[in-house]
Amino acid sequence: MKKILDLLKNHPEGLTIQKISEILNINRITSTKYIHELMGEGKIYQRKVGIAKLCYAKEKFVEMLNEGKLLKKLKKKIG
Image 1: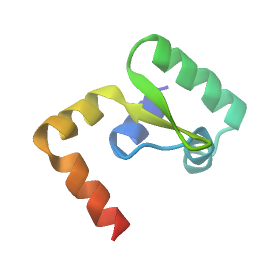
Image 2 (image 1 turned 30 degrees about the vertical axis):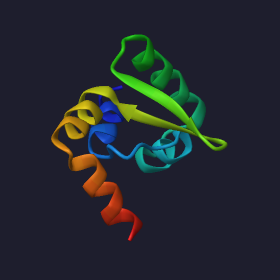
Image 3 (image 1 turned 60 degrees about the vertical axis):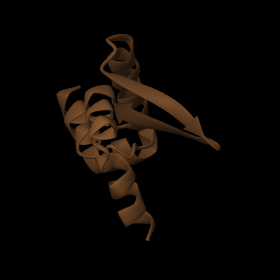
Image 4 (image 1 turned 45 degrees about the vertical axis):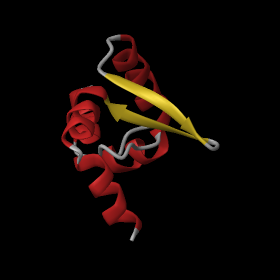
């Protein structure tokens, strides 16, 4: 679970469960189980964007949102 949390902290723009599974080389069902446990603990949250469900590390997302860095990072990725 720590690897998932660390990964999400490094990706404040959010990641899908599928992408998390690919990056960490773990089964998607296993990663889903751990993500739901982390959601229950209040360490991450999930939001639906179109058909995708993006996962975010709550701590890192709030920190970057407060500092205004998230918007800059998203704009840089877009173009």
